[in-house]
Image (cartoon, rainbow, N blue to C red; front, side):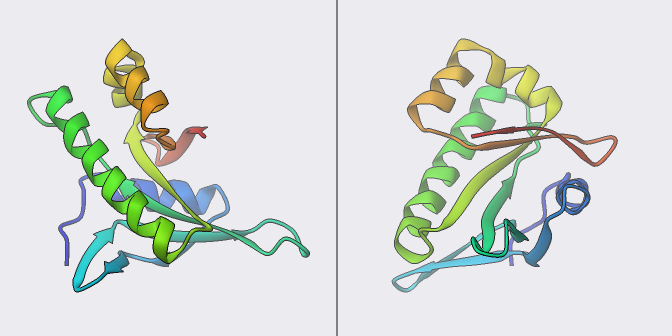
Amino acid sequence: MPQRDLFHTAVVEALQHDGWTITHDPLELAFGDRKVFADLGAERPIGAERGEEKIAVEVKSFIGKSDIHELELAVGQYNLYQAILKHTEPNRLLFLAVPNFAYEGVFSEPIGQLMLEAEQLLLIVFNDQEGRIVKWIR
């Protein structure tokens, strides 16, 4: 099992506060003989006729020595999980959950904006102190 991120509990609380039900903690993603684990799987109803919205969430703290290194690791992991989900659960959207200070930091810089656009990253920006979602970026 993977080690939980520093802000794992804060993201769980934020999603639940936003109306999501945590269905997997962690969410296993398997392809061939390999398995990886996204931090969370969650669902919420989107209307009687439309069923449920499903997401996978990878939590990243961005508290390492280098924001760029953290960005490199996060984007690589996001791309791997995204490729697997396209084959196994194409209706489940993958989000990268990042603390507000990372969004206002590296993600607001040109290199962060480039990654958001080029890699089509979906973000959940959360307040790590309050355990609340600040912004969804689709």
